[in-house]
Image 1 (cartoon, rainbow, N blue to C red):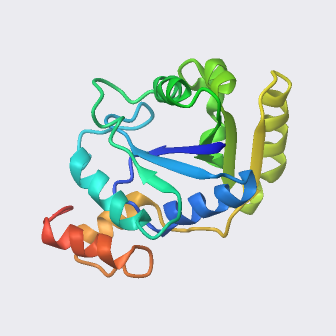
Image 2 (tube, one colour):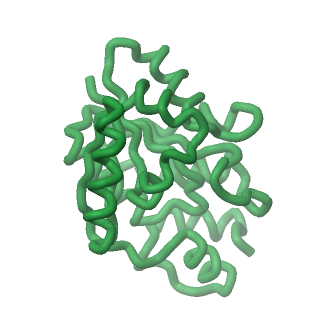
Length: 198
């Protein structure tokens, strides 16, 4: 079985996240995907991160219509920073006979050599990178080739550009702006009910 591992802060989860998952499933021919909101992201400041339970619930709402997608609280339940290598070690133990595919955006792939124990990550999983902008293709392929030279399996696919970031969306939500164009209605209702991003 080919299992996608899809982590992120998902603060909040938006249509760019769901589109990336759909793209990775097609490109890597995944049989199932495990979505994992992280506890403390190693790559960004997390002092104003919405509670893990809320991000978990928003992900459950955003991905509930997807076949063979499970939202896991494994990273949320861990202590300390959510290093990807620890997550992949865990799921490699849980699914020793299956092939793991680590889903990420192309921007993350381009700084992958800076990740904690990145070479071990490459031994535990293939990388399914999704590009959402046209101008990174030559650099992305060259970088992917450098990782392939180390024995890594890297799949790169193209997705429709998504121009709004989670930071932009949080600012819109805080200002009371309309986010129906970039977010699932059920997620927006959850945010409103629980008074998040106020």
